Image (cartoon, rainbow, N blue to C red; front, top):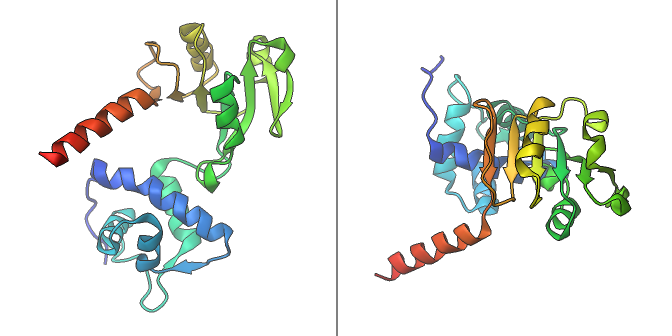
Length: 212
């Protein structure tokens, strides 16, 4: 029996990457099946919420099996399809200063969305390899751009719009923005801004509200 399709809420969608990250780690550890209670212990999300969220992943009555739980690989594949991600998603990094180097060192994102396959910088002295990833000069972006890459991380402070324009021309559809600069993208390009200052301000606001 199939269920009618339901619109997935933003709250549920925001939890899917959390599940995927935990399940990638579980799979890497060799766990082929899991219970919602086990995933709950890792993520801190109620098992009832997990089961409800998983209900949006299929038109069937359930993805799990009584006494066995959920198939780790199956849930990972379904989440990948919903999120439009794959383990081998190629990512590039633009800007390998202090912040870019820290991001590069953290590469592979705990088996969630792939890895940084190439990075670029304006400093010719940095060209070579860093943390096992090839580092190219930004002038060679068009010639050395990885085939099929749709995601770029920006950790630069200059030439931001120009760089974004070049990335869009190469087919990049998603940008993780650490630049703190305003730039314009095409309607089909998604930008995720990472602003630590704004995050701290929001945190303080929430703390103050909880004290009232």
